[in-house]
Length: 258
Image (cartoon, rainbow, N blue to C red; front, side, top):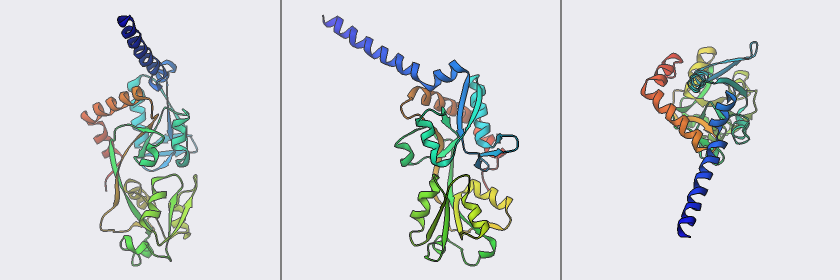
């Protein structure tokens, strides 16, 4: 009887493991031959959508193209925005996302891959206001309006960094930097990697020469929280690509440092 009980317990464990394997996104991807990736298409140089051709380019796009190729499947980009980025994963609208800042708030609902890149937050202003804003505290004043995009990490940061300022939170497809360009906000904050591209594209903008960027943050792919099989596969893939210099080469291609 004891042997039978032990055997039954072992069988239950094996069946549970087999069920978890069958329910994994990895099996769905391999069975259907398609990797679905959620991407916003509005974060230069990570993910940029060309509305005319409905195609994407960027660092993230190259990462996901490589992942799909190594899986031996087709790649499908699923349009999303920042406020629905996490819910798209939890509802299985897509198998994972492109790069997203790691945050405790997002980790309450979704899982993450291991990190493969890090960024920090900097403020941007119009160049004509260079004398007015020279460091973080110059923005933390009641007569200053700082913009951020709904659903991004910066939405929370703007309130933490500038408790005395006014906030302007805009919703996609609008973007926070457009508020600065139009004069509806004095500044906005974003990742340093996007900031370099913005000042290159809009010479009337500049990065505030702060003493140091704030909130150094690793980025990773958002994934289903309970799908350890899929998370393990992606983490193994990232580790191998890091060892072979894939991410380093990609960082140089997209100029992810100033």
